[in-house]
Image 1 (spheres, rainbow, N blue to C red):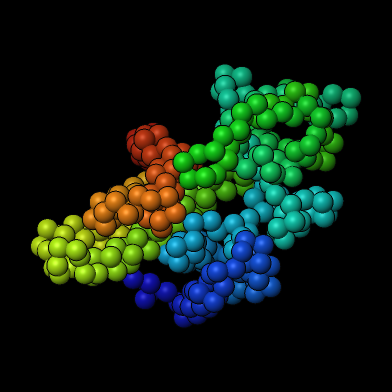
Image 2 (image 1 turned 90 degrees about the horizontal axis):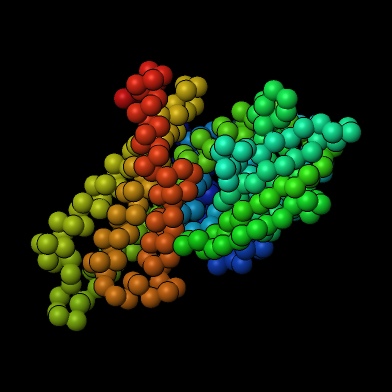
Length: 357
């Protein structure tokens, strides 16, 4: 599958997978410390192969490797990327970016408007930027140290990003809920929240570009989980069944099993082609979007079928397949629901003549 990779990428993959194998039983804090020590935690902004951030292919290899090891949360192994904080001032670098990249501070991204007719705004009042509005589905807001808030800046409604400390006066978390996969999301209200002017960033393109990268990396996680699931299922089907023999001997089982391998192979091929395209072309939003849809749906269908073939034991809370089922189901909505993304693909073709086949 990945035999087309350059030798240095294969070496990176093998080194990273060896690291995961050696440290998979560490707790989250110990894993983060070890990953920082080895240089893996920082690859989103400092590649281990060259100066600058990891390429799309490097990030795909890393995220797929984590998931194919059966690890559902990559955040203690692969740290965040700079996003909108890229090329920031020394003050912001010292107080926000560096602590975030080292894992000492956590950031959340407030992007989705609670009411699109009344978006979150910022305006300059008495030399301070005053923020008002309400954001929905802010992931990890409950334990973040600061938020990156996308807003419309008055009077011209230009789209900017504000750095807002989570404990700022005027911030309230109205609703916090845990979703199917165990992640937390909040509705956040900004009521006359005041920040210094220097915490208002013009790098909104980097923030939205981050969404594109997120979708590709989500695809890599989906493919990794599909690979792990197929491997788990293979072991389950080879076991001696209570009825005698193994389920792998049955033709009906083999037909379903083969479909899982075929679809996982197709998703993985799509993932790596799109990652390569992302490195060569500026505008591949349609291709990344299509990859996110196909890979997340493939992963969900793979684990759903694997549970059906493995039996009721797979539904017990704590079973690997049960946890992966919840994770893959949520990814069909995360980063944009697959139905809305399908409409975006059509819009990209028919209205903007954008797309590669």
